[in-house]
Length: 220
Image (cartoon, rainbow, N blue to C red; front, side, top):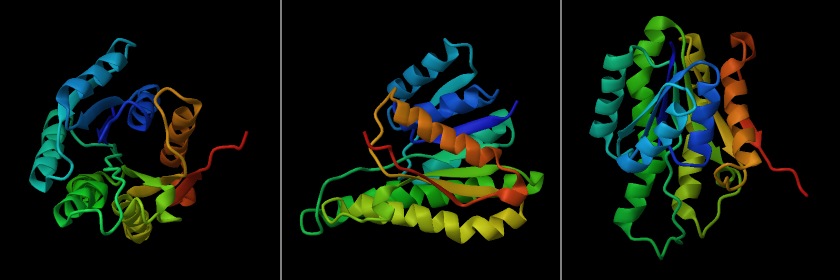
């Protein structure tokens, strides 16, 4: 059974993407800082007959994140799909945000994605298959000075996907991002639609791989 690892699983987009892969027969490992909430999300999936578990990790802690990924690999074997969904959505301008919080935000918004990609890439390369899927955002395309740290973070996510796309494709690894140009609430049609975008990226034949998909909600 293939393993799907979600980093930064919340009740909205993160859960929706995990559930979408569950429906395709994946076992999923959900992770976030709050273990109780993460296990509750996993229980929602197991109660529906899927294979899921919840673990705790701080995506801003490089050592802890690498150790978590190694532990999942030791228990379940290779990770077929990594979904990096962690984000620190802070409303603060350049002058309103302390230096320490800015750096910690970047650690979550982009640093953790880099660490996670490093941690899974070697085994994916060995098996010549695997996907690294990143949750992007509209702030990558239209940065907002009132949300500076998440704007820079999402620009970094997009750059990471595009920069690594070709060298990873040569290794059999599909890295891609979905640029989500809206807020996504739990249990909504938007959450399901974005999850479907992630599944379609994973399902692309290798000769048709793309580095990015965009989700823009339809206007009423």
